[in-house]
Image (cartoon, rainbow, N blue to C red; front, side, top):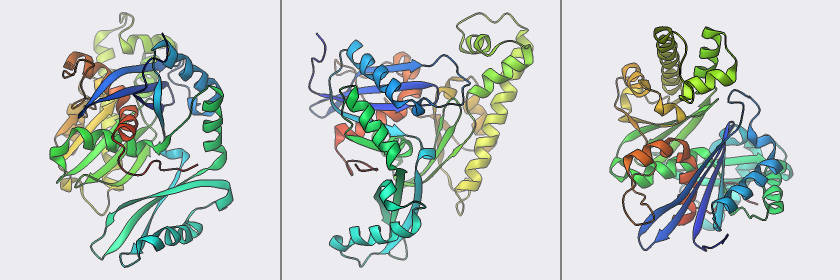
Length: 360
């Protein structure tokens, strides 16, 4: 029977090439993975993100939830950084709590590059600086973007309880699973199909994030170009769905060259973006997303950064429905794809922090 559980916390990550859904349940003090869904689109190199067709996507999401017999108690949606304007602002620590909201609103009117009646915006306190300033991240998105999501989900019979930036969802997934790294300077890298997201954390707190327009579609495009084959065939060869009929040495060289290019570009982006920090200040790099499955990618990250580079395992402290640790075989096959969705679902399940980054 559909819709048979009232305890599902559903995180949804709509990427440029796939819909990823993580459904969590709470059982006493444990978080359980009820189910995970990864629904890919037909063209892995399409530059048109799924996000642009909200009505069609929410129909798919509704059908997927019914198919997997999931009744959401709460639904959270993670949206990519390029859809949102963000800026840090600073307010003196001496400002009282009841005046803080007014102070943020006043500063937001000067830093948001849109008319305030055209946007949905919210803020998150990041911490206190050494000179006793409250550091606040303001995020704003065009209201029509947020309204499109809300209305499309409502038409599909679903209500969105949370809309947050994917960088915060990724932060949630990491800090929940890696509590021992709270005193460290960590870089998170989420390698998607067309874009890779970079998030910097210090002492367990978000510092900054950025994106680079490179992802796993580079491999498919390179294979198609080298062997002069169509994109779909290159994708099937790359994913192992069909046997590689081409020169194995040339194929492996193509993969290795693409890996080196991707890793080098991301490390260079990290160096520039974490300024005034230096790469030597970083303790570790954790990588997730579909690209983490490429053999040699983590090694290439390590060689280009001289830092420990590890797989960000978003299911490290999450259990299966029997309350047992998720096996590495199962976890490592799905975890890279659902890290953001898991982080959003964790936000709902743990009920920590603000209810949403972008309010409606």
